[in-house]
Length: 293
Ligand code: HEM
Image (spheres, rainbow, N blue to C red):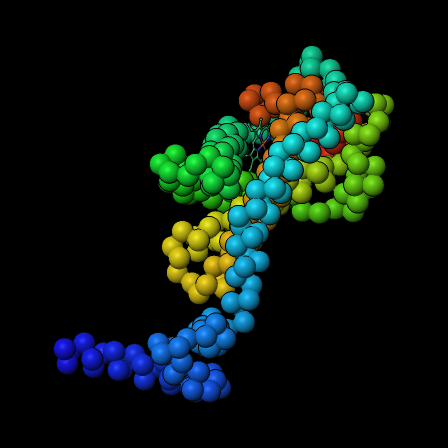
């Protein structure tokens, strides 16, 4: 009995010391047990959780309903917008005959496809977690979580490689502003030279989001997985993780649209490594094609 009483009294002393340290009247502790009131309970919690306690409800609401709505919105609105773009402007066609321009090495293509597979797994399993409560939770969601962690490890490695491979060509240039102003010529059916180097401003935005954003996803994801942080830090990491994931999913849908539909045959460049010369001369008019290109 004595053994139990000593640690218990130590804990009680610790609580009182914490209360005094936090500038709270230690008297608030006395009602707990005898006749606890909600006010004294709140003050007691304040000692440990501080101001963050008041954000708990907001955070729980965001996690349980706001993010699932945002993701649902992105998964429906973005494809519909680009479907309408396709109906109105159609795909851009370029002459695929003749020798092409060499764009992507075997290593670049391999890394890219590894990134694509791991990223798709991340998106699918991430959505499982977001919509988990509508899918009944359970084993499916827990297995999804394990796949999510494995895919995250692979994707982080590929994001580092993509960053190093492409960083030189992805730095912002003055003509990127012009590209943005004319929306890359995608709101017109005419074929006019577009101000862009090897990669255009849209591709650069995707690159930075996928690589730097991917790094932030890995960093915040690590905290959520290991749980090695204070409650408030975990909440910030969780909101950061979900918000960035929403932006990544939106841009990924756009990336798919550009690669598979907006430019006819564009995906072959990531398979063979070559782009049609006419496409490069028009869509990347500022790119100096290397002599051996
Ligand atoms: C099935 C999914 C994917 C397809 C079909 C695809 C297709 C392509 C194609 C065709 C290109 C060359 C575009 C061009 O230069 O005209 C490309 C480039 C690129 N991809 Fe993907 N990709 C996919 C997934 C991903 C994923 C998941 C990421 C990273 C998270 C990614 C990151 C990039 C980057 C950074 C580039 C270079 C910049 C750009 O062209 O946008 N791709 N992709």
